[in-house]
Image (cartoon, rainbow, N blue to C red; front, side, top):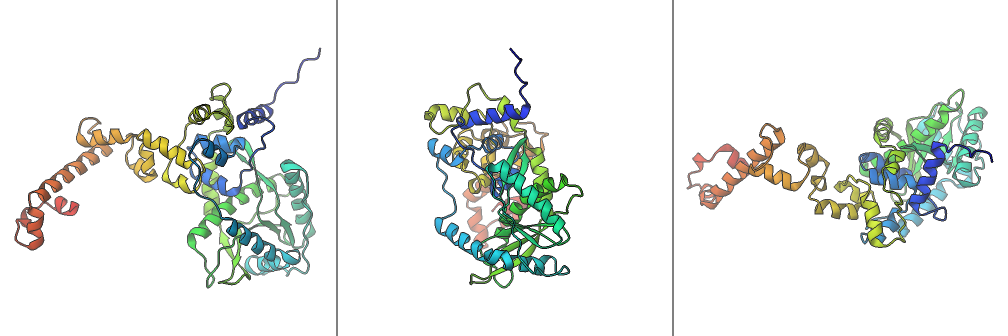
Length: 399
C-alpha cells in the first residue's frame, strides 16, 4: 500500500483547533476586528489567544461555566447602525465616495460613477480570494471603486483571522482606504474621543490585513493610514465623515500581535483530549479552561466574554493583576496580595527590592498617621489648639 502523505503543520493545527472547538459539526466563530484589537491589548493572555484562534464561542462558554457576560450591543443599537450604514451606501455608494473624495483625496478627479464589484464567494477563504482579486482589478482601472463588506485575512499567532471591514475605497491612483461606519454622532464636527479611539483601533487591524494583501501584489498598492470615519451629523441621520490618522494604533497593534504566543505552541501544551465544548459537564469544562493560563485585568470586563470567570479565579488566587495592570507593574516580583501584605509588614521580601521598600515605608507612614489620629492630635490641629507643629510632613500628607 502507498505510504500516507506527510501531515503539514497547517493541517495539523486546523485539526487540533477543530477538536478543541468540539468537532467538525461545531462552526468556528469568526474573529472580528473589535475582538482582535482587544486581544492585541492583552497579548499575555494565552487563554484568549487559543479560544479565539480555535473559533470557540466564548459567550456560550461563559454561560456554561456559570459566569455569563454582562455586556454587549443592544438590538436597538444594531438595528440603528444597520439602517445608517444602508443609507450611507445607498445609490451604489455615491455619497460614500463623495465623502472619501472630499475628506481624503480632493486633488483627484471627483467620482463620476459608483463602481461596486460583486464579492460573492463560498466560505471565508473564497471571499478572501475574491476580495484580493477585486482589489487588484480596481487598482488597475484608474477610477473610484467601492468594495462593500470585503473579506481580508490576518495571521494571528499562527492562525488566520478573517475580517470584514464596512467598506474599502480604491482611489484613482490605486491606493486603498479603510472605511469605518459608526452610528454615534459627530456634534459640530467632532465625536466622543473614546468612541473615535475604539474605531481607530479597529480600523488599524483592517489596515494591517490590507497591507498583507497588498504585499502579495506587484507592484504593491499603497494602503493609506488615514481612514474614513463616517457618522451621523449632529442629531440627524445625514452622513458626515472625518479622516482619522491610525499610524499610532497600527504600530501598537502590530507590535502587540507580534508578541502573542503562537496558537500551535499553546495547543501542544494542553493535556490530551482537552475540549472547550459548552455541552461538556461543568467540572470537565472548568478543568479544560483552567488548563490554559490567563492574564486577567479589569480592562477585560469591557472586552472579553470570559472576564467574569477569570476575575473570580484571579480574586480567589489573590493575584495582584485583579487590581489593574498599573498596580501590577509597580509591585514587581510580588504577584499575590498575600506577598504584598507580608512585604509591607516586614515578614517577607527583600529589603533591597524597591517595591518592598516602598511598601514598608507606606505601611510605617500609615501606622504613624493612624496612631496620631487616634491620640486626638488630629482634632487639635483642626481647631488650631493642638500640637500641630510637631506633625511630620509625611504624616500630614497621609492625613
